[in-house]
Image (cartoon, rainbow, N blue to C red):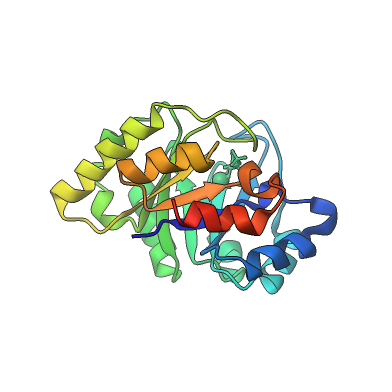
Length: 216
Ligand code: DX5
Ligand code: ZN
């Protein structure tokens, strides 16, 4: 099966967002990945809901929203108002993760749980069947253009085993440093979805790069 490709808007040209969104619309991308940061959970701030309102209006792809913020449950209505397909919250940011997952589902979105590079896959054992997707960070979150952490490939294999052994239908997405080389290894290890920022928006031909990632 071909991987789901989600270009990350964080690497787009913020002065010409409409132009880059139009490129994604015309491409073979499946989703548009949106990174929301608060300067607390991660040492950076990206964009907020007033900007994303216009992004949501322009994009024709389902939105894969990745919240790198503390207390993400506070913003479920705002994420829902964007028309988001998936709402990714960090395991490390949710004391009552099971409740947050239910709240996201009740709001009519697909709940996804994100793990930082140092958080073990095994911690998801008791929630794996309740989540639509697990997002494995392959860089420390906060910035685009970082180097891929190779150990993520092993984490994908381990997560694949956990999912298959429980009969869950959960998808595996990977985010950070994904390019043709690392993307190939991830898909081979069992990843279903790839987020790609710099490798797409930094390419000479971004649409062609999306096509190549789609056909790894
Ligand atoms: C990083 C973000 C990523 C980022 C990926 O914290 O979660 O989505 O945009 O960018 P690249 O693909 O350049 O590593
Ligand atoms: Zn992300």
